[in-house]
Length: 72
Image 1 (cartoon, helix red, strand yellow):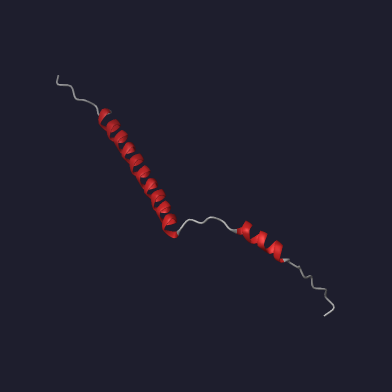
Image 2 (image 1 turned 60 degrees about the vertical axis):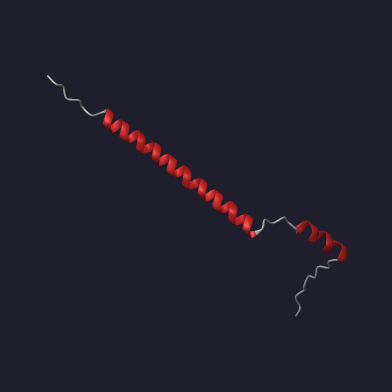
């Protein structure tokens, strides 16, 4: 009981200014979900395009390096 306890006094005026600073514009849940779906959709399409390009290059190099038999 000999410990000193610190008490912070907050005046009403300070409380109002603190609350006004805390308010942050939040997106609605629906808007946030749309943004997440859009981001993931973009990632998936980028990945698919990259794999298609790699496959195309691999097939072209595979068939162009084949030794051609001569008809002699």
